[in-house]
Image (cartoon, rainbow, N blue to C red; front, side, top):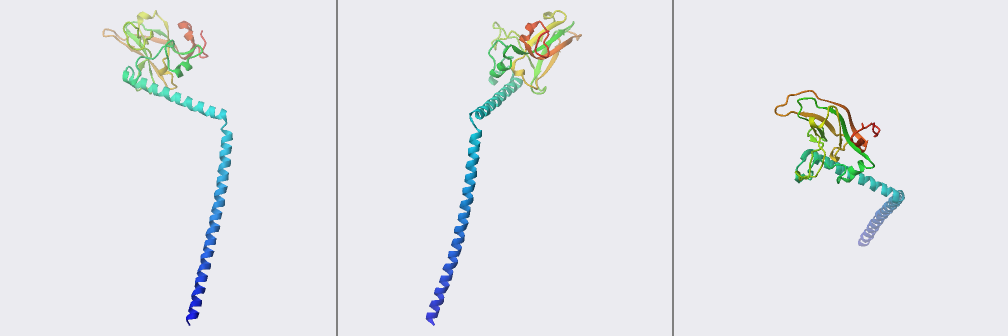
Length: 238
């Protein structure tokens, strides 16, 4: 009897080991399949990387870098525009003054925009009439929330800001009847969404009277027509 029990125990142990072997073989086959699939994925990824490296040659990389640099430069201009619109004349914001004239030191992007003799100008024919103290030309880069003069005259003798001979406060005594006024646009106004307005300023003893503008032109102009000719839409003078 004991001998039969021993034999049965050995047979059960043998069957158990056989089952374990079968399970182990299944696990090994599964791992081999997973290994094969992983090798295929790695091979495909290597092919993709090789193709990507082939596509990203030196010229493409230079083009991508140039595009990124242009985007960063445009963003810097927008930041300066916002600074001009919201903290004009505040030294701590780094935007003191009304903006440089074409002959002074300018932001590199703005300098590029007005290079080759093509400058951006605001040009109008103006008749102030009687009873008007002055007419101011202003711009806004934030959809009219804030407005600022295009230029404030700043001469060395009495101004410690960035010097500029231009003024967009136009007085009747400075204009003989119908007068042509040409002003270079400062870099903070060189945006695609800048708005412009003409505003009359009355003195304490002034009464509102007639005034008019004509031939308003805002855009590029060859040397500003030297302040004499009329700027045309093709950038020439007439």
